[in-house]
Image 1: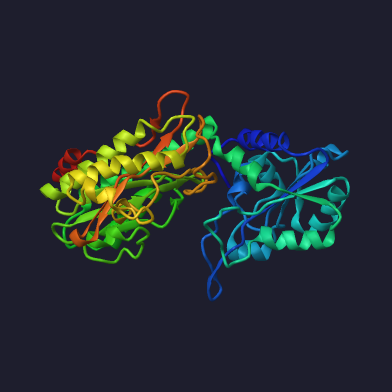
Image 2: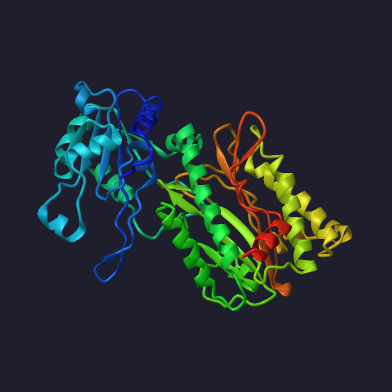
Length: 429
């Protein structure tokens, strides 16, 4: 269940989708699989973000069918859910009733999943176009077949004469622009993330293990009402911070090392995404502070560029120039080195090898691509970093930024970011 977002949001989202469908269409959305862990165990369930966006239903084995031009009004929106029974309740707890599903989603026609095939046949034969959903990200491919992919194969075999359409481009456009209520939810996820960071600043000390710090973050997230982490947290001390997706979180935090934290709360299914880098012993060395302040300079300068009309691709180009200037000041290479570098292997990429930003929302790496023009209501990250393996230093600073008609709004302003403020808070523990 989603007790945070009012159902009018889901109703508005469905209306926006209807306005983007062709006449005489049916659109079909599947919930996520329950993912096996081992033995008879499943990983904690996370609903498909499109299903959450349109219905708010966070329960497995759910299907939503939208058929806006169906001649019978009650058949224009139908939600199919699993039928509760005593066995399910005894072993796994209560499942949604039809009334509860309507209260959450605003969908008045709720049927049991066992009725899907017969009802869907009627809707399809009343339609010319069938919209099917599939995750479209050129950088990601799962070896596990999704319920959507399985369904697409089945329905095309059953109804080969219909015209098939893609839902992903439409859902991407809709989800990119956040409504006021969604932005407030993300703000709250950022607020919970801030509480966890303040707690970490009071607890971190030399000889702690990275997983102890992860546990402190997890505790603060759950204590403050978050569902948990929006993604696997990175708690990386010393050289571990140079491995961009390090999530083992098992090493000792040594005196004199930096600790890179990449973490964010998930609240009402919306993500926060924050990175901070702090000294394990509470005091930056001169070199560490020099590198940290260079990163913060890139952060502050880039934030002014995050305005409507630009793209993440353009921001990446602009940040490359800013970082090159800083790298020269830091003694990592010279302008002469740049003039003679291999254009396919720029020197910059030895120390900053990831993008400056990505979209976020229901997914921490949300729908949208780097060529998408930024518009008011979009939320993106800002995350410059510097990684010097031979010095055992990795630094990243990351906040979540709301694009507006005017200047960008930093949704994480309450999270300490200045080196001196971090040192002061760590001294006061």
